[in-house]
Image 1 (cartoon, rainbow, N blue to C red):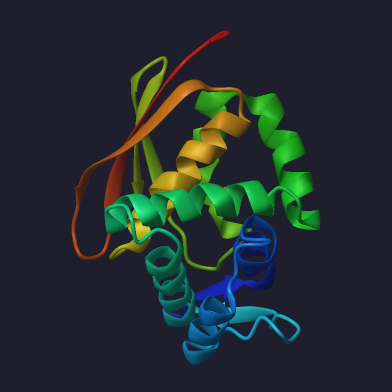
Image 2 (image 1 turned 90 degrees about the vertical axis):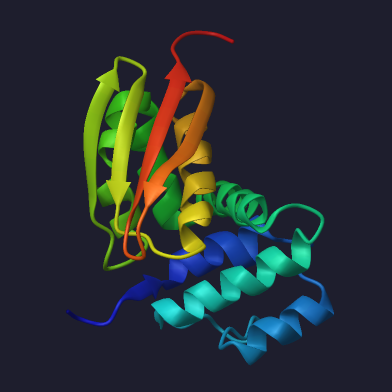
Length: 184
């Protein structure tokens, strides 16, 4: 299998835009130690281990007051919010808003693949407002993805989106994604 890579605009979405004004000098130093130097131009891609380490450092530094899983999820939400401000994100989310929640979740693989070279996903319908989504996310990054999915559902117009981790192994995770249609 080729090396797992995470692309520049994903890092930009989280660390430059999503965390704008929140990156302290201490966090900047810790990120540099794990291979992400925010004082230099971002590289076109980073290996998966650098991504995981940078997300871990940011989650622990910025969300030490909550359980680590929730800290990761909060970062996932911020990444989506920041990613929407990138050139790639603006294009992607202009389409996602038109799809609605069910079709938006159905495009999870394509959405995540715009930011990395490794994501695989399968969807199984549970009801008209509920799906199970299998992804090949491992370790604590699965909780980051949980938050990203929650923010992504909101971006599709989902009302009261909820994403829970139904089960996981060392190599993959299954999320239950639920929402309400209509106005809150």
